[in-house]
Image 1 (cartoon, rainbow, N blue to C red):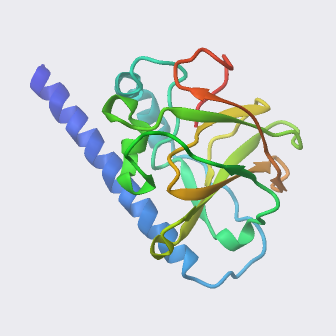
Image 2 (tube, one colour):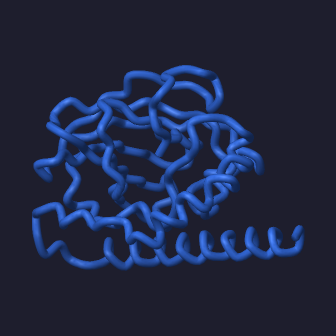
Amino acid sequence: MSIILFLLILSLSGLLIFKSLQNKKQSRQLQATSLASKKIPPIEKVPFYFRALDYLLIPLVWIVDEFKTPLMETHPWHPQNIHCDLISDEIGAKIIGQDPSRFSFDHLGLIHTPLFGGWKNYIVLEAKDFNKFWRVGWEITYFDQKKGRFCQIHKLKIYQTQIKVLSGINDSEKIGFGINDSHKLIPLEIVGEGILGDGQFKGLRLF
């Protein structure tokens, strides 16, 4: 039984690493292209098989999150890459990362594993200009210009006014923005911060 569990965890870890690498490569290719449209592209739905995998991963996420709530809801199949030129610097909330973790965005899914030294600091972003739901997005510009930048929108819908996101280390400039249910860019405001497991802002999801 233990061998089967080990092989399952190994397979899932391999899938996470593969999808992370694929996402990163696709983002760099996208930023290198010319911007064909000034509109935010349609936000894709997460395929049902990945949504099923989200639930299957809960026990593993529970462990790597050090048995703290809320559980991290971001896996490599959740973000959708978009062209960074679509995002105005004036629309977002500037996120200054000060997490003591040694892992940067380049370290694949390790940033989401507190058990292995991943990020623990979070901020709370608040959106107001939406009706039924909104989505959160981020623009990451590395201080090392050779690494470039990437922009993504989280595919999962948010029905609350607030969401927790990891703030990360100070290796890049981060801008948080929102997309409302009318498919328009909306500004976000930083309304709180903390460390995972501190018991603050109960009921908020963690992306």
